[in-house]
Length: 527
Image (cartoon, rainbow, N blue to C red; front, side, top):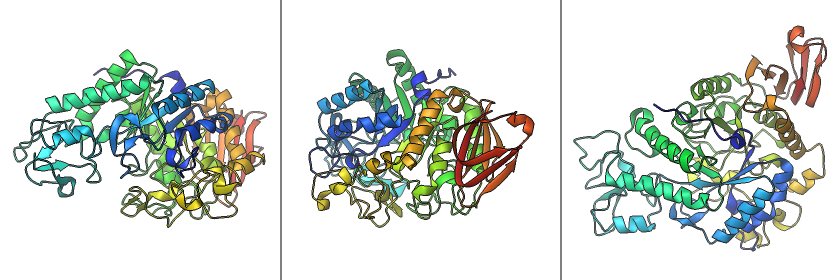
């Protein structure tokens, strides 16, 4: 097996920022964020130190699942703007040293996509998965309304028919299964390359790949899915070597060796991310574990699960790609959630920006925007018990009407704003140098100018309780205490040397081999 090469250097050094476009900045007063609005706010991201922006889906859609139901992969949704608007965004971002990534949904389309409209009437078209009967999993088979008859397989909602990338193994009871090299799967792989090339030609730097693990069905060990992505990576390395694919897979030990440049620690698979952030409030699904997380004000958690998940992934990746660690995302609760207030989350950013993962900041987390419970369902956001809309509220820019997000009447906003009169804003925090926003900006700048804090330097954990302490690059000490009570740790004086130089310190003191960390504190020192 040929292993992929390392990720491009720009990705290894990146600070990635996720934008939910409908909630970020509205330029035309319709209550929905758009591409010109984002372009007008790029200076905020440049000041912050962001080097790459990932936009959640912005292609043409009926928005039954907030854009993850694409009906034209080559057209920007009119509510966000035009192809020219995206080109302007890419160019404006480039001049600020920021790359733009889009969200690719390869596993399914909208039922309104022309591909599906044709296949629903043509029994010779095998771009989707068809059966003459309902089989397991029962809830995923939807009656076809076209002349073809039968049933099609849907990935999530009935409006999202699954594209056919084949099955990893046949089943005599399901004779309609096709192998991965059948004409339908081959056509879909070719279409996937064509879609990516189309946007690469516009200057897009890469894609976050939605549900990248799910393309080939009945695939034990994801072997055939991995083979598909190795094929894509080979094409990418040959024709677009500086472009990247970031997987929503949740298993970097498998996905990165398969060719994806990076993979996220996710809330719904494994415990690497949840053991850090999930405090049992906010959006909760079947994946919720009910155990304390490490960033818990009462100090009931442990960093051991995160460290173990990282070590396992790092050993498998062997320098060929990256693990991405997000503060949150459009499907999971924000850092500021439930009992964890924005005054408590600076240590989380210290971890994010000093651990050898690819740091991913979800929009608004840099100012401590909070998860809002009890909001109305919006465009498929309520997924069972998961209240995903609570993490999708409008960005809070300033103290003007609608927090500077939009000039529309409040009742026309995509989702309601945080009603708290004390809600944080970019303008307020930019003016206060002790704010969370300034903590984040300084930590990003420190990571940028300190290679020992980046993805290329080693990490050695000295203590995984409270405080968490680790070495980066052998000569930089990081100490984090995310609980309310202070914490102490005795370290070998020989490790600390004669004098430790503080690089970013917030409530942490080193003296005579002892670390003293106040509640909700962090410290980064050069030894």
